[in-house]
Image (cartoon, rainbow, N blue to C red):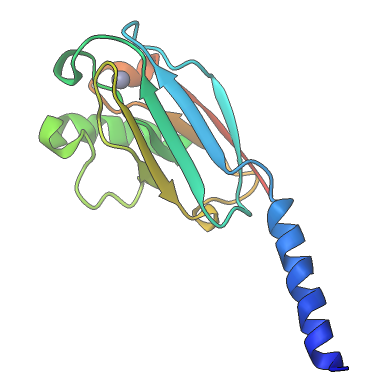
Length: 151
Ligand code: ZN
């Protein structure tokens, strides 16, 4: 009987159990031709090894006219990012180059398209003030929501 190996196995089981209890690790949003997300609030856990952000554009309009993305930032950074996003333009998916305020973002998609990204949960702090929004010019006034981050 190898006691050390047994203890390691128990420790690993414990860690796996904790990871499982991390809470929600996926945000699934729908955007439409009425410039709206289907949710005003989403919850994820900072304890997730990986957080997945899924976006489905359920409208019909092309990306040039009604493009949507999902950007995650601290709420106070949102206004500055959306302002600089206009300068970055469509070719950059309305994301300023190397912008440290942007915690995560998807590309811009049009009607009928879907996209998905992942980022580490440790990029977020439990209890912090975060938002998700669309950085297409003019959209963030309506296309925004609160991102609640749990432990
Ligand atoms: Zn949009």
